[in-house]
Image (tube, each protein chain N blue to C red):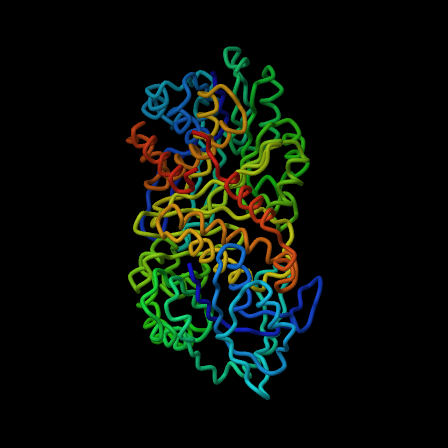
Length: 303
Length: 303
């Protein structure tokens, strides 16, 4: 089924204690759409770039079958840029520089052809823009939303308005504690689900992820990684694998949601192996299937 | 099959931000044997108490079918006492007082009737005593060992000698990092397993537990607890459920080990609901079965 993805399109400069690279193709819209492309067909991307983004990068989406007729190219504009440095734990990071550029005035316009999308992924952007998008589309089967500490702190009221309209929220554990103002994740989940999203995924990094629905709780294991090369985009790749699998399955129920969490985890585990989308670009469906099986094996108990 | 348990027998004074209680029957030997008793028959306990321990407490083990002919009662002696206060996170704690008393001169003597035990659980005591016990028994089917930061720091050489002799080690994540000197748990596991124990369980509190064997990794979920009343003894109850189930199953293989981890988690999740062994004393086998099923459901994916 058709999948509408909205998110940032960016160039990142990333520095880890072990390597650094500049002008990495990135942004939530990029990671989500490419990750989802391993599962879903008919992916429709909405975003904004500057003239510096270039045909070569635009072709990268096209070649993967991603419809970019919803991507605005601002003549004379510059693409959003983010620069950050990871600490030795490869988890915490310092933002060195943020240049919003064309993202500063972004006003998402959903093309007519996108308005009937059955699955919608609101990547991590201003909650006002996320809500704005929902106002332009017919009622989809599933709306998944991502957000971050920046919006939880900076636009709490606007974020609440968006959360009231979405079916699923994907956040990490520290964001869940911050949003709910409760240190216990089980209580946090109850508080956040009461804000709107009946489906809640709390990602816990090396400790896996928790899925909360009306049917109960699902605990997904983490892939046993010995090294993380670059964590940037892992959360977006999770969201892409999650909604991409659901869009392909076409059904949202307890069992497809559990599998979707494992496919999200699978895609995130690949993402961190190289800079940006590099690993996703050489990834094969066979590798995805093998790693998904590894996730199943990690918590399997024979009857 | 017969299960030999060695560990401390103690009185604890415990204070949490929400409640406090004195003279709680405790100690690793107590928690392990009572927890294991939900699965295994023929449990043989080795430990030491003072005259103040009292017939009433000794009867508590006897009534549960635990053989205490290996428990030394030191005439005129005082039982080991520990006193601690938990912080608001109910995870970190301060030791307020430790009185070793009769434990200071404890020299475990394994009764002849215990020396053929097929399963052995070395509770958290001085690694020198743990090794001493192993020198007194025939080669069992499985030796499980627990330890803590106190011994990792204080008796590293002696601990290494004990670890070289055991089949399985149960520790928590911070202890694993400390013992291996590596922050990554997957690398830690490789380093620790090279020290001796081919079966390694790393407990991660609210994030569940990891089991490492030659067959690979098993990731066990945590029970979604909203409140912890008293964490004291949870690790020992885990060890008791783990080895108790294996002693009952009689077979140590990848599938029984996975289930043993979930039974260990099950017993730990009950332990924290009340002070000391209070919750275990009113616990029914039906409740244990129900919660074990909840653990299965937490990570279940239908084929």
